[in-house]
Amino acid sequence: MGESGTSRLAMLRFLERVQERDLARTRQWIAEEERREAERQRGMEARQPPLTGCWSVA
Image (cartoon, rainbow, N blue to C red):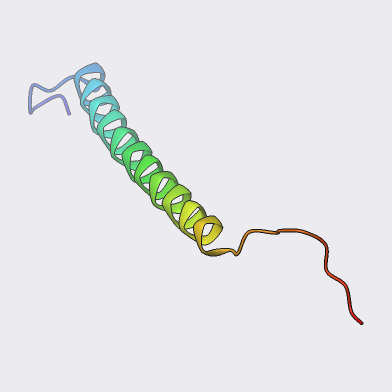
């Protein structure tokens, strides 16, 4: 550390930036998956036949 001229604080700040970028990417993946899941749910609801009237067995 000392010989390279890079301080511990500078390395920690770099690590912080990397982790923030990774967290942002993970949050983006989560948001995309939530959108896909919502689309799947809407598709399933659209395919279900509507309930109409009363059913009777004679």
